[in-house]
Image (cartoon, rainbow, N blue to C red; front, side, top):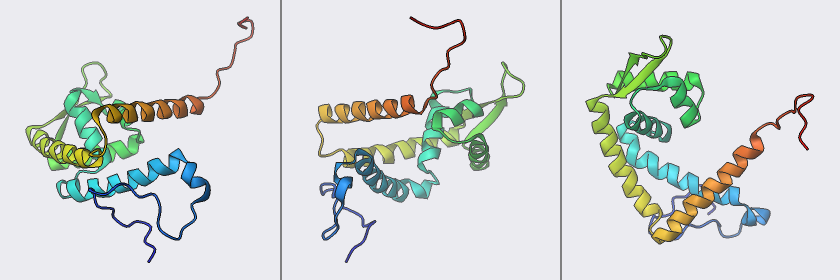
Length: 178
C-alpha cells in the first residue's frame, strides 16, 4: 500500500521511490531530493527532541543565543530566517521555560539582548547530544570527505538561490559603468 510519509529506518539507504509511482522529472530534481531528505530528518528531529520542547527553529535560536551572548531579537530573527513576530513568540516561550533572559541593550535602549540561562544551557546541552546522534545516523553512509562535500554543495546551491532572489541594483543616472 502506498504511504507517502512512511518512516525509512536509519540503517537503510534513503529511498526516493515508492513502488508503482512514476516520479517523472522529480528524479532529476535537486529540490525534490533535498525536500524528501528534509522530511525524514524533521520527523526524526521531532521524535528525539520533541520531548524537550525543542523544534528545529528553537534549536537554532537557542544555539545562536548561547554562542553569541547579547544578540538582539531582531538579529536572531534574521539569522534564523523567521519573522520578528514569530521570534517574539519564541523568546516569550524561552523566558517562560526559564531558558533565556532578556536584558536591555547598552547600545540601543529600544533593543533587548538575549542570554541563555543555566537551565537553558542544560536543555541545549541535551538537545545537542540528541541532535549530534541523529546527524551521525543521517550521515552514516558518507565518508568525512563526502559529508564536507555535501555541506559545501548545499551551501553553494543556497548561495545561488539567495543571489537570484536579490533584486537587481539600479544604476544611478550619471553613474554608468563602462
